[in-house]
Amino acid sequence: MKRNMLAVIVIVIIAAAAVLLTPIALAQAVTVPVSQITFSEDTAKGSVHLGGGCYNPSMTVQCNSTSTTTVYQYYFLERSNGLVRTTNTKINSTAGSTNVTISLLLTTPSQLVNLGNVTFSGGVGNRTHTVYLSIDQGVRASGIYKLTVTIDTSVLLQSSTKASTSAAGFETTFKI
Image (cartoon, rainbow, N blue to C red; front, side, top):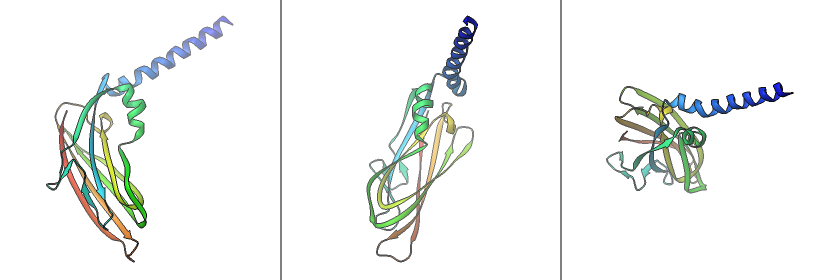
């Protein structure tokens, strides 16, 4: 009976150590940078328009921030919420429908990383998007990073019989 109890205790200790040490081994650090880039897109008028308090017409986003978090907070809380988080600010499904694809390319100090696409559908209107970048996307070492965002939309307004397509994009740089 004592051996069984000892075996259970050893297994619990090994499992706890694995849970605590794996994030540090994956990140090769105790803390990691997390960069956030926020912008908004609006499809209410039948085509895509970028905006928000951080966006300016020269195709740059000025509101990006980088903070440092623990690997535990990153792996167990932040990462599970996704690369792009979208908030519907003012959406009207009765005014029409839209399909939006956001494509992301990250230029790190050493390579170009295709972060893929995020696609969603819904009513027309305004959405705010925040892109979260960290070690899984290649944001590790000190240096200058550039995020290139392309947004392609297909919008069908209620008053139209044919969907219109449009595209917009921007790039922003940030430093780690």
